[in-house]
Image (cartoon, rainbow over all chains, first blue to last red; front, side):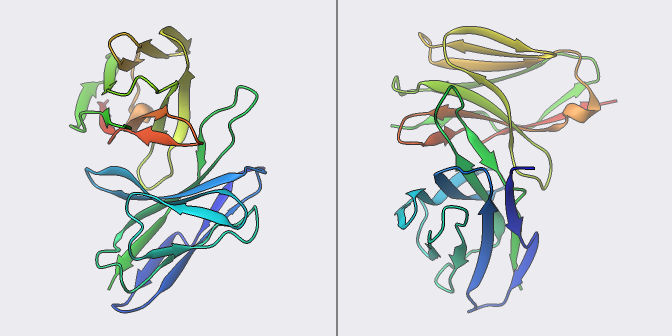
Length: 114
Length: 110
């Protein structure tokens, strides 16, 4: 079945640590996105990528980094510079053609700072 | 440019009631309008997608778009406890980008 796989489902980070969240898709979508979701704040865009080896900052990119070396993969690193990383992180991909529009989301990673 | 307003207040309704959700927007460039449903601790899933002004039905769900008023709505008829979720509106503004509302938490009480 085609879809987006995020791992791990739960992640705990110690103060000062970098952690990497995985996002893999087998939908053959060109565009991929990372969102952060906090209660009452909706979805906030961290980074997005329209094509391999290219990505752009979203609204809240500070303290995060990404790479897009393969079409299928778009990992997100939460660095120690991110002061409040505890949140629910969602990866998505999209295709905009042939009447098909919209994002497909993964099931999310819940990151907690301990 | 991509402002979407959605009152995030929780909504509790008895089973069988009609649920009414809405979003407003200010950017006339928004082209496509979507509703996503998100269950607790899960990713959002596309529920409805519309382009033109008017109504679109899919089973118990109706999406309504009024481009002249910059207003979209989602109606759920004969609501079920399984409809309890957060509903997010989303609007496409080009360049493979969506603008999201903050989401409405809906609780259907048996």
